Length: 173
Image (cartoon, rainbow, N blue to C red):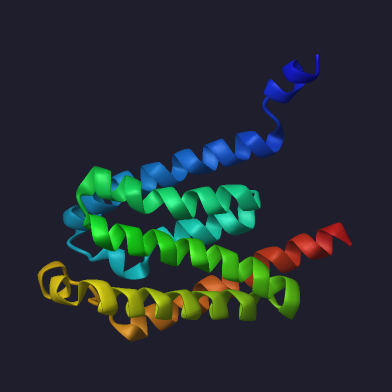
């Protein structure tokens, strides 16, 4: 009987699965929409946005899962990013999630924790990209995201995280 009850879909499992399908759908359509609109949608970091949404709207394990697998899915679907960059991006996004949970447990300010997690994980990404694939950067366009756009996205995602998690805390208290 215990095994049967563990197989039932809980609300959390349904939300996580639905969210994962949403993430995969977004990643599937981003290249087509970007091409159709002639807008470089990748500049607003759709992978990171999906990670942050998973982080604040689903369980912790799902955020880790999405961080590790979404870049791979993007590579398989669109051929971008190329394999070495995909590995570094997966590490960066996973580190972003780890750092957020670590920092938010110590800082108690979700905005500051998220902005710090993004900035640190980006620094690690650029350090790894420079160290391991410097020559490929010219061919594949690593570092093509202007820093001002990254700063705006970082602040917006930090603010979003703060608002959502603060509202959850207020509801729970």
